[in-house]
Figure 1 (cartoon, rainbow, N blue to C red):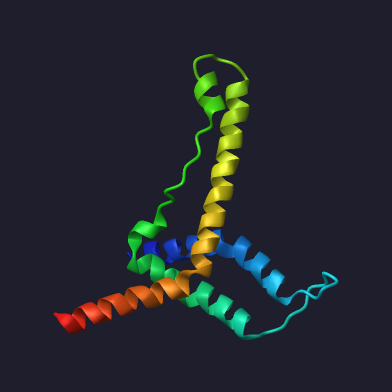
Figure 2 (cartoon, rainbow, N blue to C red):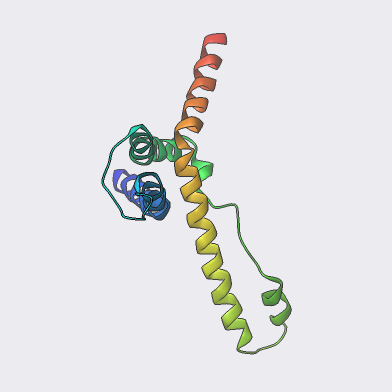
Length: 131
């Protein structure tokens, strides 16, 4: 049971890693484009969002683990009637686009995980106070 949770957290971290790297580079790069290692308040927020809030949010709200955005192109639907090589290309392109959408969605969720988690905790704490 604990091993499954650790694997889920690790895969969530890896899926948000490309957006974390791009955001860190956008926050810390010099105007010339040279990368530099600096720590500031936005960088601390980014790192704490990735390491603490994002896994906790995914364990707290399990419906966020599943990707609701799936892409099915019209070309695949139209060419599914015929047995041709175009089906393989379109299916591969759909898989690549689904992966890109999944990584973008995971990254945006990681960036917004702290405010979402604070809102969720605030909602549940106010609800407990009222009842």
